[in-house]
Image 1 (cartoon, rainbow, N blue to C red):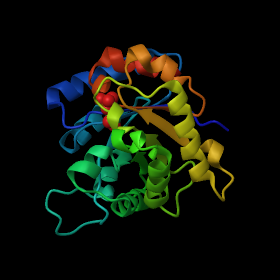
Image 2 (cartoon, protein in one colour):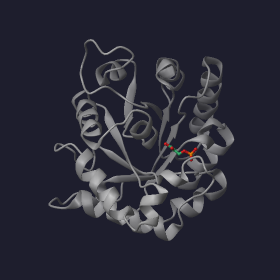
Image 3 (cartoon, protein in one colour):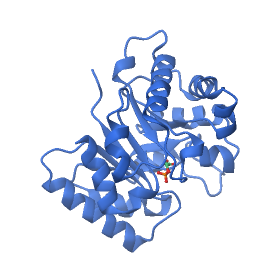
Image 4 (cartoon, rainbow, N blue to C red):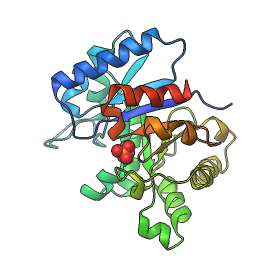
Amino acid sequence: MAPRPMIAGNWKMNGTKTMAIDLAQNLVARSKAAASVPRIALCPPAALLETVSRAVSGSPIVVGAQDCHPKDKGAHTGDTSAWLLKDVGCTYVIVGHSERRADHAETDAIVKSKAEAALAAGLTPIICVGETQSQRDAGKANDVVRGQILGSLPSSATATNVVIAYEPVWAIGTGRTATPNDVQDMHAVVRETFAKGRTDGADLTILYGGSVKGSNAKSLMSVPGVNGALVGGASLDAADFWAIIQSVA
Ligand code: 13P
């Protein structure tokens, strides 16, 4: 069965406490007044997780983190465990975002260990994959994404305890989106790769990410095999993010 659509806002390293409360409260009011809403997750910076978690409490909106450490605790200055994320109210955690793969040299093996930690803590990992422009130009996009999935997916992953986000690196923050055909093809690759040897492939939530906005959400979200969006820049604007939410409601 096709999964219930999901829209997640990745705030990245943006926001203040005041902005976080305003934005969360605005979206809570809209979601409470709406006839139907998809799954909605807000993923603010770590320091704002508890603030946003309190602001959305009692609403259909849940909170996700942007990263976690593979270990439960210990001498890892500056890192946050999946257990602590769960403790402060998170439901999801993004792992393997291309910005973390690039800025922090995160390999598939590291991403996999983070996704395993998330599952062990009772969080749903949103595992990000996606090719660079040069990999696409070289005709290697499908192989790259296949390899990332096979390398990053925990063995205990099921269609309902993980989410996969396809985010072509060249479409992130650039205003360029993949064409509906390219998105459809790659989501099929993601689903086939996940589904190999299992029967629950149709239930997997696969999000598209990369310059999704209110103005292009309807066409991207209606592509077969797309179950929602992982939104960066546009998730910082309540009206624009709400328009994306409405596109799948
Ligand atoms: P933009 O929507 O700003 O392109 O970012 C996409 C993204 O990286 C979400 O994780």
